[in-house]
Length: 276
Image 1 (cartoon, helix red, strand yellow):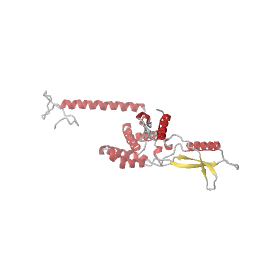
Image 2 (tube, one colour):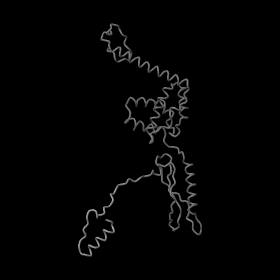
Image 3 (cartoon, one colour):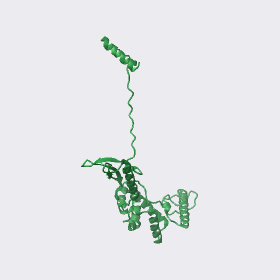
Image 4 (cartoon, one colour):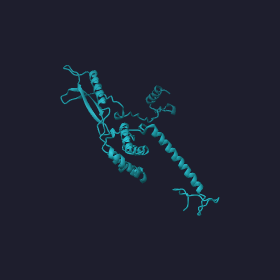
């Protein structure tokens, strides 16, 4: 039954002094209510660019003016700050700006703002990152032996040269200059890379994005030295396998130092498989 027919039926019943009789099919049911999840856009501080809305404000004397709000990066702080910029008075008979002119001035201001603050230096230094690493990160995340090695890298190699360096100045170019300085002082490339791994962990632990400003892939290591490092690495792996096989063979040695075949086997230095 349609809504019109239902209304006529109810009206006729009231005229006759009787109560209307409605069956289940005559009753209109409301559609079910479904909860919808609101789509939230990124906040202005998370966007790559910003295009705030032009607004009209009223001053104390009653005159109107165009203004807008924008986000500003502040040196040394992770969060942006909200700022207001007054574009100019609204056009009247005596002068002022039209909305189109105000929009043009707003876009020009934002363009200059983006060019001016495209890369702001940070006030944090490497010493600040080291402090966070020692006091917060290491006690929670590292074993004592791991932290001992890292702390040795910091005290002996990193802090003397990088302590007061702003984090923004730590780039692959400055890293390469330092690496060659260490190489001339007698450090091997293996040691330099291990020290730089510690540096990367220190920087990433104090960064909100958990990223580092440089990659070791950009290290300016001569091809000959790279090849020698690979050869030494393979020799080390080969020696480790040989030692493992000798340890397994030596597991048959008894207290007398003789194998099950009667041959005397020499103990392997550093091997824990043999009984004293």
